[in-house]
Amino acid sequence: MEKKAIDWANLGFGYMKTDKRFVSNYVNGAWDDGILTEDDTVTISECACVLQYAQTCFEGLKAYTTEDGHIVTFRPDLNAERMENTAKRLEMPVFPKERFVDAVSQTVKANAAYVPPYGSGATLYIRPYMFGSNAVIGVKPAEEYQFRVFTTPVGPYFKGGAKPITIKISDFDRAAPHGTGHIKAGLNYAMSLHAIVTAHKEGYDENMYLDAATRTKVEETGGANFIFVTKDNKVVTPKSNSILPSITRRSLMTVAKDYLGLEVEEREVYLEEVKDFAECGLCGTAAVISPVGKIVDHGKEICLPSGMNEMGPITKKLYDTLTGIQMGHIEAPEGWIHVIE
Image 1 (cartoon, helix red, strand yellow):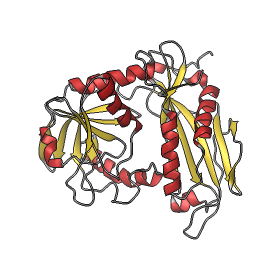
Image 2: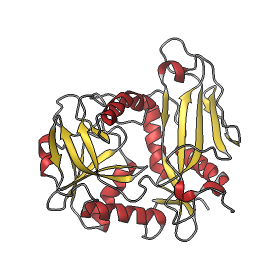
Image 3: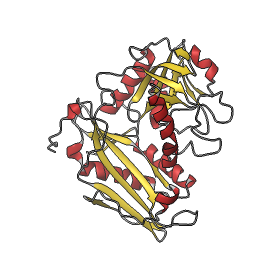
Image 4: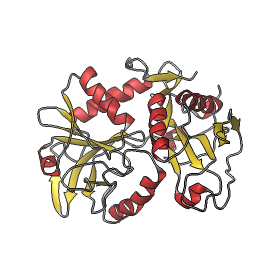
């Protein structure tokens, strides 16, 4: 497959229209077979449920070119499972797991010319999403839905290497107990926009959200889970019913235990103990791990021993091992790599 004439080395993290996208409609209680189409526009009623009551959810994953030339995705079955859980919570019809993975595969294969070559540092970002499409004026679930998958090539999240970031303790709450923090709903991201814009205006890169009930425990940021490393090299991640279960974070914990031989622990993490950790990172699809060098709590600085110059040593090993698995340098656990072509 001949690649598109794209300056892969200078790609940013933005949208670029590709040739094909997958579309399936839910009407009269069933999903249709779906099609690949060149049409990148969406036509819906002005009263569509998604526009009135934000009945929408999405996923995010990437396709890579491995060292041996294959195009692969990373654990798409877990994205399918997470969208299933999200759909159930939002009273949306489930798009079956096998069909989800197949739709992703079809879309990536149809846009293979946009999958960046191995070694470029770039990847093909994949966005599956679903929304209520019919007119709804009373507060109730839609009766018709559309599931779509589009792709866009993106550059490396960190150009010139990952530099530790500075984050702040947010005065805003990300998710309520028994709310929707554990699902990937569009509404969660809409409410986080004011908080992240505020943080940026104040000179910070991200927010650390605390639990809404007691404001004593670490939860996550607006779009990533936390991982911490203790001074004796134990990898710790916060546990809460209102944290989105990051596929990257779960994979990193397996890497820490099974590849690096480290002790791992998922538990409640209290803000007062953050000062005692050696390393901190934000983990998610876009960056894999963003190292954190400093956390500011209303003027009080918590400076991680790993510093502001580079990733901490354990965080770096986790990053290198997981990206090595994704790119084919390191043998993956069974089922982690889905080969498309």
